[in-house]
Amino acid sequence: MEQKTKIIAEKGKQEITITREFDLPIELLFKAYTEAEFLEQWMGLKVIKLVNKNHGSFEFETIREGRVVFKANGTIHQIKKNQNITRTFEMDNLLDGIRIEFLDFESITDKSSKLTMQMIYKSEKHRAEQLKLPFANGLNMAHNRLQELFNNLNHQQNGK
Image (tube, rainbow, N blue to C red; front, side, top):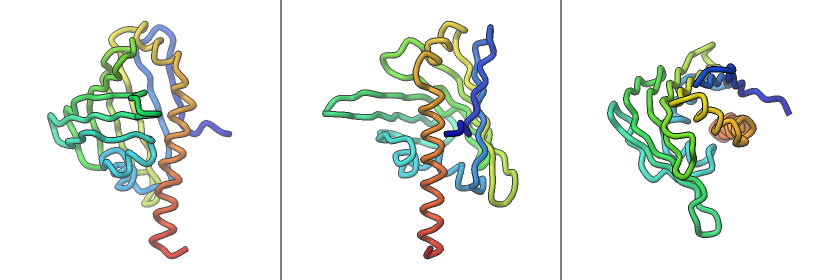
């Protein structure tokens, strides 16, 4: 299957750039990242807390067989509707530390948009820890679910 989510991790740097184009208007792409009901569906996690405002915060977790297998939290430093989100992101029990994420939402046409994420880590070593995980495939699969979720909602709304 084609990796529609592109990940650039240049050697010697402490950042990752992720890009993905979606067949969604920018408003829906932004909602996918800012509304708990949608985040839970395409990311496959539980939203514990989500305060989408400047100096807001979030907390997510995934529980399997009664135990927490993934937990993440952060601060939303700045949010501009349908434009960008600047936040910190930290996963519990992992060595990659806290990273800063810049999410930029761009309208391509009335029915398509692009997400560009720049993730900056404390060091190249911290970034390398992230890249050891099945990060690229997992993110591509999650983005595929995001696209499919809104395709299905659109079909339901249009009675198809």
